[in-house]
Length: 436
Image (cartoon, rainbow, N blue to C red):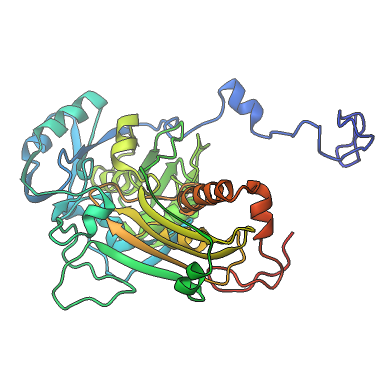
């Protein structure tokens, strides 16, 4: 048997060198379980007396919830628990914690898990039920009577910034901008990075190109929908089995939202059928725990693919403006960008990361990047593979390709000519250490 710790030969490199890992087969510790079907994913756990949980979701993108009548659903034979906004305590507005690659406010989180005064996007959870089977659970949802006052909605970030746009959160204040007392806005945050004077830099340019781009929200598209099984006992102990990218993070979030001591909640991660950043957030898990606590029985919940797209966070859609100036010999004299990112119905788009990355690959004397985090009537965005960066880079690198073509320079040579070195000041502030 070959010792895997020794350098392997005959690995097909064709250059006369032997490598330890290149050209060899990686060991997949989970491979056998997955190809034989033994691996257990989020929806694969079955417990005795387990109930099925389902969620009633808003059919409106923006609406006041005047009242919720669950009496008919609760009276249906086979229904063991019904929960609404009344089953979750509101959280302090300043309760901010890290959530995987993003940052989240627990007040926003509990209002995303279950709508309170308003439904803020189509698919927002309004109520949830637990019943002895899926058929009865679905019937119970149809018996819940919700009185909505439908409101105007906005899903485009540029439109959401305009005067007179529908206001999504009336108490929102813009971080990083002065705001008149009593003024209402959908702009959650403004960030700016840069140095030098872009006006001076553009005056030095022989060629200036200015372009605008629009991108749509893109979902992570994980093959396994969100799923979990929760079990709460009468003495306040809880167990949670779920598909997640961070079970300790999920435990902390669920304990906070349900008012539990974190030591009383045991969380076990299942195998995961993809996440890509989108499973660093909780959606069903607090609902399943609340239903189980009310029913005193285990509850399984699993999203349909439709629910995944309606109610979970993709990456931001955005409107992007980029302006770049160069000399005829290929030196970038100035770069400027304004990035407007959709946050969804709650603050927290990755626009700061996008603004930091936009011109990061270049050594620039004059650069500015401004970013806006903008509320729209869509699900709150979640992380997706280098959150925020690909959106900004799509716009800036498209302009770099175009401007290289205009001056007749190879795009790769153009980038190498303007690449930063050790000690170069980055577009977002600090100086670069050793590169490469």
